[in-house]
Length: 230
Image: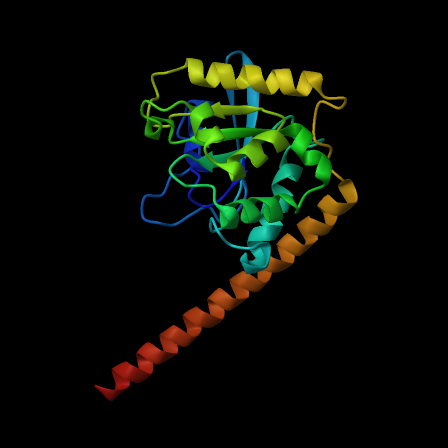
């Protein structure tokens, strides 16, 4: 699953798997590392990967290097590659020029053929009201561009309605229809690139832990200094 930080990817993963597999934070914190979960759904063993999101109007340059690394590496967590890449977009946001550019640039982290394996998932389906998703698509040029890039593959989810099992069943049917129609049924992982990303990821994690220790030590020393002055 790929998308901005407000898209509701973790909730989407939970809806698909039918469990509270991914932590959905309500305090504003978002996913920082790609996470993988599995479950049996509709007789299929599914592997779902949640990835960090980018701020909805950020350029690729404005997204942190670690987030870019995690997003790109997310497809490598289910070798030989994912059968479907779900581009998650919330219906509560208007797809203006800035949002579209952000999607285009972040999808550019992958090879161009990723679009052949991408299905657009709209979240916040309850926000549509009496309007159909087709009417919403027709009303926004940016949305039309994304839908066309996904070759008209899209699905609407209401992550608040856990009783509606048909929405997940229909999504899985659309995914199966997509990969059956592709020359290659999955987006193939490049092993050399995957190895490079994993090395960078490990290096980044070590640096982050080292900085955390330094900050903790500085805070401890500062507290001791302030405490000594009282």
